[in-house]
Length: 224
Image 1 (cartoon, one colour):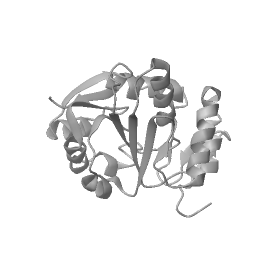
Image 2 (tube, rainbow, N blue to C red):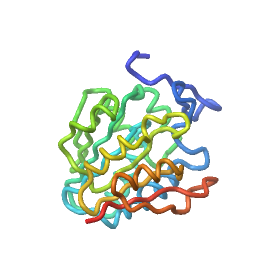
Image 3 (cartoon, rainbow, N blue to C red):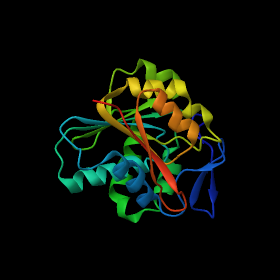
Image 4 (cartoon, rainbow, N blue to C red):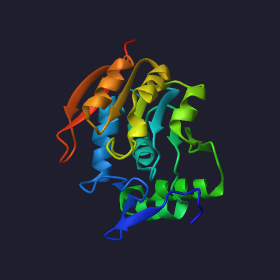
């Protein structure tokens, strides 16, 4: 594997686990439903989709969140364009991504298109009105220089206990600075220090029912 790609181990031969962070890339209880619950419903999507709506994400991982969003956008018949910007320091190799996404047969066509696009070049990638931009490098260094502002954030770094750099006050302040008025953020974690960091950044923060075995998750909204 290319040294630039994330080293991955496989639990039971099918579930990808980050060797660097010793954490799974998606829920064993159902990655598709977790993404829909946490990141779509947590940001009131697809109801909020509008022309030029912009989603930003911390941690691209397997690309599952992107694919689930793409499917929801198409199913809703929402208008184009839709922009999806993701910040990723340790990208998966396309072959590992393909292996991970094989667990979701409902996404096979879009997953194949995504893997092929990533293998072919560095993007941005156009998927019929949906534009994917992957910003490489440490998000703490790359987000401050990003010129965009998101309408919705997917905060999806590895567990705060294992990847604390993705959840600090400084980064949450940059997330707020790059959020449109009235914009939202959602994450699977309900860790107190994460909620406090979002609140300190100016978000109105609420704890919500989590997915599966996780009792709670976090939703946040920036005042308009």
